[in-house]
Image: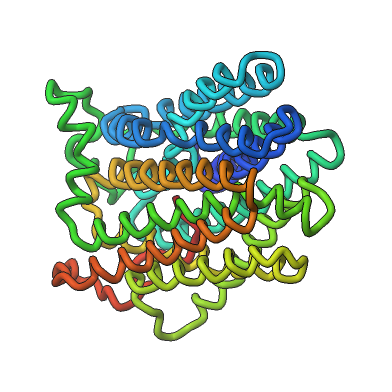
Length: 421
């Protein structure tokens, strides 16, 4: 990376921004539950904050790919999300819930870019020989955010109240703004890294074609389509499980805020699972890992449905052990299959679809949990089983030949283990 923009500075911005993003979801759940007194309202608030990702992902992904200053686009996304979270906090309990929900929808528009937007720029900033090491370090910031975010939300909620947890997420997003804003322009790539075709140009007249390029690229590539479809359904299960965590914390662990700590335990298990996977000499196919992780999540949700404290903790750990390798495998498939010129759009489009699935699962579980928490967790398990079925059915079709020089049987030949959007 260029001297005036060090790798250390990039990693700081990515880690802080991703931690703020991971803090925001649990913090909104806790704040919604505390200020409205309704688990359904809290879940709908989280769903509203993520459902708009279906629009935001393709739009901002296209802007990242076409902008001469993609860092400014990323900074604007961070600022919009921080402002919307602040508005949600100010309106909760003071304005009609419909108004707060509408603000939450606006907050969700830049959601897919808050974490994936950083990674889509990394290969452009690095000389080719430096990409593997930088990618490994960048991957660690995903896991760091997933580990620290829920823990911060839970701890701050205990000490200062749930609204303070939302304010913490806003502060972290703002702290990442200068790093994003000062990302080098497209034209200043390091030696040995050519400018990708189409980079740095304004939108052409065919704006619709630009916005849908990521979707079309996914649909035309069987491995990408299979991994994306499976991950969307799986994310619905993850959203349902997360929406149940405050109630699991209250019922099994003595406090709703301890539900956020369950998410940190899950993230820690994700880190351990990825570390163990990386030590294997022969790694499983990423396409198969995605389907397997869906079944493990289903088992975790069923364990949590028992309500026993030991089973709830075991469920959180098992869910993390499934989610880490599953997300790593998804990231590997994208890296293997996505063409360079469309990578930003494919990453953000895939992330937007996943976040939309997450929103639907969280909304459904929130409505069910009001009447039956075990029923909501069984629904989460159902999504896991459905994701595994989707993966299996789509695998029956003949796969595309691997890209030249790639061995699709080895997860480690693509990207290092990481939690990714």
